[in-house]
Image (cartoon, rainbow, N blue to C red; front, side, top):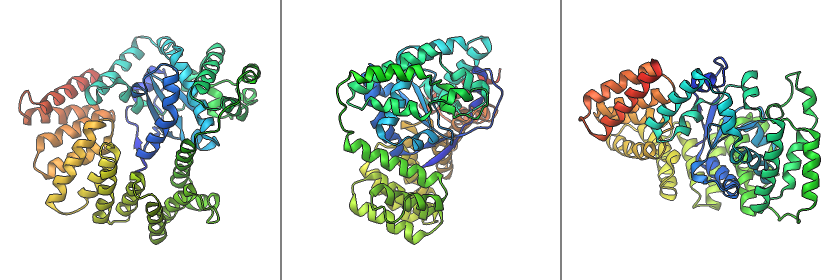
Length: 443
C-alpha cells in the first residue's frame, strides 16, 4: 500500500542542522517500492563492504530531484529524483555515489562539524526515541527528515574533494556489482551547468547539495574510458524499476497526466499498473478492478498486486473484499510488515468481533517487525481498545505519539500504560522506556 507518513520528529533534525522549524514533508511507505529499492541498492552496499541489513533507504514525497545521506547509513531519495532518472543504472549510480559518502566517512565528519551542545543534545533525544521504539537509532532520524530550507541544503552539501571521492568510489561499486558505470556520467550530465545557478535558488536540489563541477565529469570520463564494456542491465532489475516508477507516477501525478504518459497503446505491464492506479484515483472502480485483476491473472503469486487490490477495495468502502485480498497478499509474503498492516486496517473496518481479533494479531506482528510505522500503531491501539486491552492500547498510543514527536502526549499515555500493565512485563518495560525518553525530550 502506497502511503504517506507525516514526519513528526522534524524538530530533532532541524536543531541538529541549526535551522528553524519548517513544514513537514512525507515519507512514503510501500512494501513493493521498499523491496525494489533494496534490490537496486544492496549490491552497492555490499561492494562498499557495508552490511545492507544495517542500511536504511527512505523515500521523501517531494518533487525536487534530490538525494542525501544522514546520521549513519541512512539514505534519502526524493520521489522527484526517482521518477526523473530514466534507467535502473542511473538510480543505482546515485545510490552508489551516496554510499561512497558513507563508506568514505564523509557523513560522520559532517555530523561532527554540525555538532555543538544543542545539536548533540537533540541528536541524543532522537536516538533515545528510536532506541526505545524501534531498537535502532536510525529510525528516529529517518522520521526527522524533511525540511528543505537553504540552511539544510548547505548542511547536507559536501566539499568538492568529498564529491570527487564519492564519484570514484561509486564508480568502483558500480563496476563491482556489474552495473554500467557510464550511468554516473548520465546523471552528472543531467545536472551539468547548474552550478552557474548557485546564487539564484532556482537550480535543482540535487545540484545544490551535490555541486557537479565540469572537472569531475572530465575525470570520470577519463576513468570510464579505460574500463571494460559494461554488461546489459539485469532484466529483473529493469522490470522492478519500471514497476516502481509506474507506481509512483500513478499515485503522484494526476490521473489524467498518468493516462497520457501511459496510454492504452502501451501494452507493457508497468503501463497497465500505472493505468490501474490512475483509474482507481479518478475514481473509476470498474476499470481499476479490471486492470488489477488482469495483472493478478498474469502474476497470481505476486503479493504486491494482491495488496494493491486490497488497497483499491478498502478505499472504495469494500472492507470484507479488501481483507480477502490482503489475506492472499499475506499468504504470499507473511513477513512483510506493511502488508500485514494493510490487512489489519481492512479488518478493523469490518464490524465483527472475530475480525477485530484477527486485526489485532496482524497489527501486532506488523508492529513487532516495524516499530517506525505510526499508522500501524494507531490501528493497533484501536484494535486493543476494542478487545478491552486498555494497557496495550495506551502503550501503542504512547509509542505513536513518541514516534511523531508529541512528547507530552507520549508521556501521558505511557504513564497510563505502565499503571495498567503488570509490573516487569514486556509491555510495562516498553512503557517505562517511552517515559524515560519523553521526559528527556521535555527537560
